[in-house]
Image 1 (cartoon, rainbow, N blue to C red):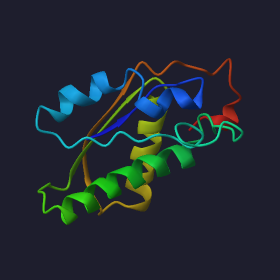
Image 2 (tube, rainbow, N blue to C red):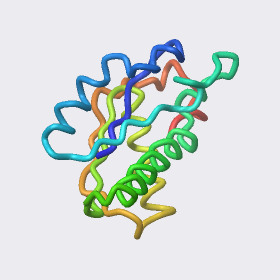
Image 3 (tube, helix red, strand yellow):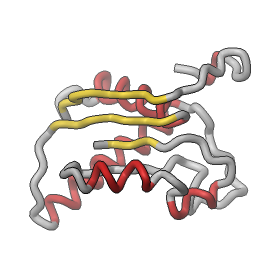
Length: 135
């Protein structure tokens, strides 16, 4: 499962995944393999670099890269996983989930089988953000 977090206003808030672990732990302890990517401009990225907010291409790339990294790690430790992928996102993560779903279907249709995608509470920003930033 790929979980995409909501907006954080300061990059260093993501170093410990803020409150996002509340989503990850219950899902992981229910038997799912969890991939919880960070986005460009958050976490370990220096705050002097801007976060490309609602930039579908970079958001999707972080999720896809994280899923691939998890699959590679599983192979190294001889873990087992199927090719089913669930996408989940909250707030900004809803946008990331939609971007990831679109990119996987358009560019990598045979890599993983997307079983379901859910976007939770993605705030409509049509009046606040120029349409060039949306999907």
